[in-house]
Length: 407
Image (cartoon, rainbow, N blue to C red; front, side, top):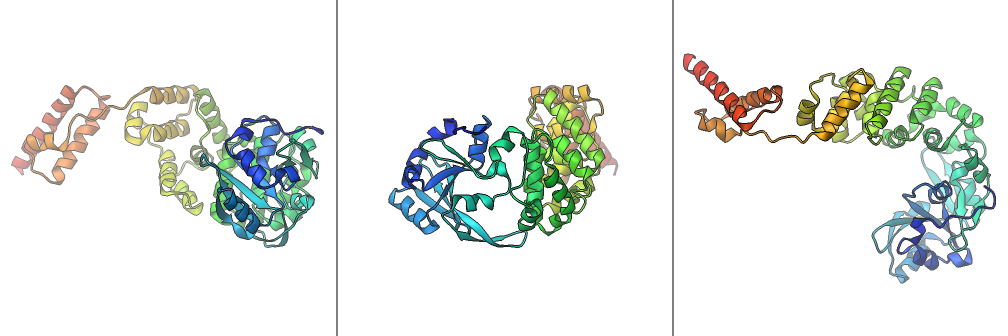
């Protein structure tokens, strides 16, 4: 890949990108595109986030943006990062070149510099340390990132053990990037991650969760998780993820593909856990997932199957798909159930509380109980017509009133 220039990808034509580069002095070599935007453009992938590196100190970046009437948000001022908000509302992170002064595995103290190579040297992997001139597209590669990109290899810059000591999250990032871009894992990096797996215990569980959820939806997630389990990477922080769980994930991922579903990180996290709702609840709480995500994992791991439409009515489309993918044993049955769920529009329950009261039941908890009983029977009969639903309600209320009169 030597001699390549940055492709004229669509993101480069976004309104405000050229203006921002001009404001930062890209024509004078004061700013370059860096990281994922460069890497992914060279691979022909869609670019989600655009980052710029600049020689300007953070306070000068803020001043330059203010003069150009570009909104500046000091999102990481201590680390030299200013977010420039373009006219269409999209963000571009602008970060001053820097070097690490001190690190503790979780946080870094930095010093600003004007040396591009020094800035590249503090980054994690060679494929993430590629810079591009916004004007000419010229690629600047200080550590062999282009060769690693061509070889589908994720390789630490410098000594892997030292890089992990600087930031323990790089263990998970190594595997996440390998799952997305890698072929054969870099031996030195793999051995270093294996040796330092216990360092993950020092990280916040939120950071672990963020990396894990991204890893789970990467193209080679299953093979990468097999490798991580084999190397004991999860053992210090998520011992619930075992070889058995990874094989369940393989089944679920295969069914997602056959059913035309996009990979879903929460569903896949549930898939790698034991079939135990309590375990799922504990893991979700440990990872500090949102309440909605916790409830979804617990529901997915609950072994309560019903007809696909009934599940969809009770749990919603997403929850029903989780349940059938994790609990129906046969692959084609799973896929057929998913298609039934996707093709079905849930009807509205044709009986309400007022209809129960109108039949002679006093307002109060008995109305809710009877309504639930009628709805349960309506679901069991596969959502019959309003006429049949009202007949079910007639029978339920008649039985209730009869029992009440006897009492």
